[in-house]
Length: 177
Image 1: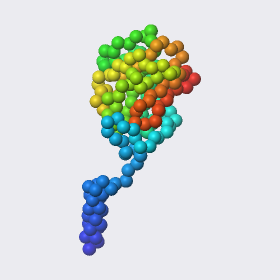
Image 2 (image 1 turned 180 degrees about the horizontal axis):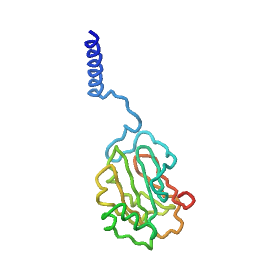
Image 3 (image 1 turned 60 degrees about the horizontal axis):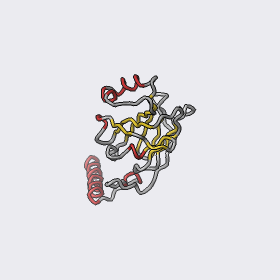
Image 4 (image 1 turned 90 degrees about the vertical axis):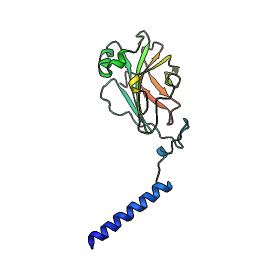
């Protein structure tokens, strides 16, 4: 009798769950209200504090459902970055007389590959000159590439706008890294 009662309760939960999913009456959060065609989410989530990174030169932040890592590419760390990212990084044409920044964006909700990062990202209020995506990162939830800016010996604030979350701001200054 006890087993039959448990089976009935489990069946009732399954039926109620199926009804909720089929009628769309499930609980949502502001992050679930993402719309297609590059429309903004209904509510903006503020920037959290930088998170710990696997490398001390990497600056990280999580804004809403998007995690961002950025690292200034220098002659001193270029070889390490190339070895970590493999052949895709070696095919990029980096002008080391300019400021190059490796940018990695990750999420599990939307396709990040369709955004024009070259026009969306600024370093100390200057637009990027170029965005070179890593080909293996194209196609979705994980995007990586290199942004090139005019030479800046003391890079400060990297800002990313026009994503379906609040503005992303990363402090690349040596005091913060």
